[in-house]
Image (cartoon, rainbow, N blue to C red):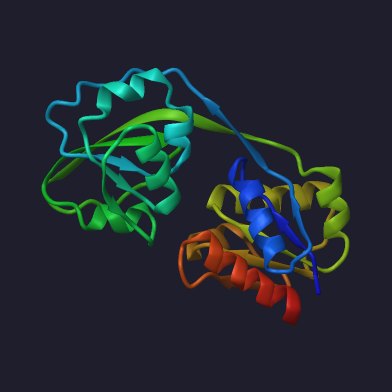
Length: 225
């Protein structure tokens, strides 16, 4: 069975590696980004219908200004983000499963506050919906760790949780002269697969945008490729 390389940032990386190992996989964690808080000022919550939250990092890194927004319900991209929001004292009104774009498509007319990392993915908004975006953190790219480089010299599978990670991983492979033809990619969403580029042995997309289905796909690929 092939080994699995997990590239998502901490603390999610350790959680995914542990879950992969529980599935019987040999898994290596090598985060490609470090998340860093940035200075921000919370707007007046009056006039906003809810918070759009596309990452659990918002509630890990947002700092004390988050407390001034607790009157607003949270529309969370997924279960992990919802848990972090609740842990920070917020009420979660909705938990999505298909990404923040799917959450945005179902918004009722009104004004919403999007708390985000730097360079957020654009959203297609329904008529009558206005979204103000505030940046709370930024992702600092990291070089591919030596242990990950060694793993990639032999057949393996890589779990990709974001488009930014896919793009940076592909760039690192090119920079380091690492071949793609014996590497399989397990991707959380179609956009991630597109941003990884071409030349990989196989590219598969998880049936659901959650870690457990992604790791189940990765296990299948580790067994069958």
